[in-house]
Length: 449
Ligand SMILES: Cc1ncc(COP(=O)(O)O)c(C=O)c1O
Image (cartoon, rainbow, N blue to C red; front, top):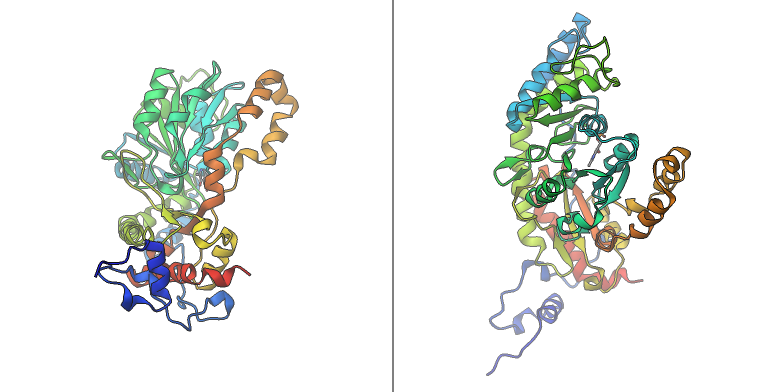
């Protein structure tokens, strides 16, 4: 008898209706089989995942003793103690670079490195729009204009093929963001930067230990910036760092972050030769960071293994498309694990409802970033007195006309993310994520009302 030709979708639906026995020579994906009594948790059914997820951050006893000892010395700022410098040495070794400067936060690391690279009032900086607000606020803080480069929805990252058309005679730098820890295609970014003599600052604030063509993310541009906020994979409450092999640049960064005091090659023309600010890291932050570094490799490996498990299984569920690594990217940091939700494959159940249903099954998730390029603060800044002095009316008009980012808009409407602590769960926990999404897919009909 000739096998009846059926589509994969028909097969999955038939299987969930209990018709599995009628399928010949067809290997059914595990997610397609439910029970007739199955009910989504959002509709009063039993949750797929009952237990709590790993908490974050996690501290250890060694940090407690070191912090107490430091506290008793009264040497709490970097000028009096050695711990911030110790952390800088350890972090530069971890990253494989000559220099690291610890800062108060990722934001201050970005402000400092842009300024040290010469970004000035009236300049333009090309930046990823799919990011945390700080990535473009730091450009405004340097009195420059952030110009958004559209996102490739498949990689969640700046699309390098869209960079060149956004360059003007005022463009001085590119700020690619390795969002969620996913490495940007830095060869392509650097090629455009070189052609047009632009500086490159990597926003690696979510990308500790991420890897691109054998190198650590953050080491591929002129400078790389990191955040150590409480939520981050390497946390210290607050904190940040700049890394680079460029000694003169790092001297300038050091001077800038220390109120403009001379440092290294920054000439001692006066007590404060350049205009800087206080962006220094505290001793206590450095001690927490050094204790957290003891677990960073183990945690990163667990996240990677779990992410790879999710990658291979989630893609089999219709309408679920995990992130794609950009060319040259070898390893993400998985600050978040992202995928795209294609609602038409779930019979047009809106993403928000899918997220609520997944949360109800005991799987915390959220919708990622919104359309930041339309953020109200941008218009407020463009309309400010200072900005109108720095940029002509015709340039700002053109900026508004070109602020159309279809790839980014698409991603903002489709993205769903899991935070990094979820990825520290067991393989069984990961299987629950797959099971819960598959359960929602099978019962998508019940979400339509
Ligand atoms: C992509 C990105 N850039 C910059 C920052 C700013 O870092 P911080 O919060 O340490 O100032 C963050 C922090 O969340 C971030 O995620």
